[in-house]
Length: 140
Image (cartoon, rainbow, N blue to C red; front, side):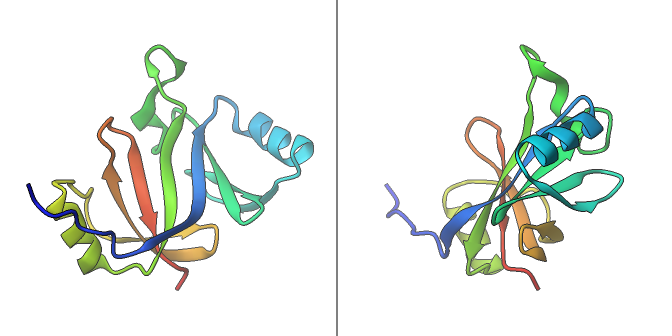
């Protein structure tokens, strides 16, 4: 059996969670008015709400991101699109080596995505159950 390979980074915190919602304006009102989260950024695809040092992102099931999750929560759908972990350092070559060592496929190339600290590098993979995990580096 191969010797375990230690990650080339430390997980600092959850950067953001992406929730699939039926009515984005209703969800914004709840997270803003009830829980005190502020709208940080808005695009056609999603809404970013500030939750302390992290973000809660909202997508609709008919949008480009939300469509991938199928039906809304229930027997045939999932509500969380992906979990994003803020890692340090973000060394693409070391991350690729670690994932290759463990037989974990990466979903494409490093992207520059918006997160709790701003725009920065991220790369996606799947856990053994098919849940998408994003590894997010520091803002540029």
